[in-house]
Length: 286
Image (cartoon, rainbow, N blue to C red; front, side, top):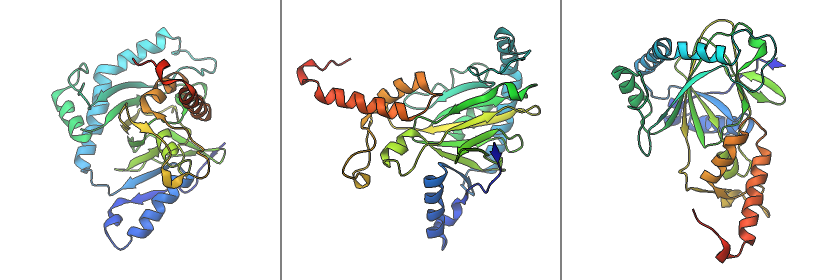
């Protein structure tokens, strides 16, 4: 079932004025009850956003569309006749900015596009996606339902072609396309750090018959060696959430991304308990 209900939209410019308290309360409510919200008046120049969107769509048409069509044929997806549950209808590439940029390793990017992407997200790792039109959207998802593994995700999504949905109270809710907005969603690490006060939320991308949807997701994640645990001030008599090293969580997440998050937390808790019980002399390092 899909619902259209009022999605939280935050005017970030109000943080610096008389409405700061109300704005902070709105952000807190969105984090507690949605795991998502949408930012407007965030300070990113509109002309930069326009240019990034234009160049991203041009790059797809020039350098990725044929590869995507070839992939469809190789997997037999160009003539869908049954529902597909283990493949995503998306064309993506990744940009890594830290600790060492791969911006100049991505093939076929124009110098103009590289400059624009460097200006847009110089301190993030970024997933650039296109979701082409799909002749039978009921047969396959653009991106299967999942929660994000990291900390905070900043999403610049297409303002004309919809598709992003989140699961709220058992219903799939549209994240509305909004011109010049940035969508914020919370990852699993923030759920752990807040000891469940804020939660990561299942979300997905549905395919559309018309239009190519653009999505640029920038991931603000902990360092690989960061130790993640619930904040002391939010812990009661017992920790509800485990403590672990972020890289260990990512290794687990890679194989179970499209499954429920709770078993991941339980696995990390069990791994932590096993480590605590292991004699120091028996601990191996790699």
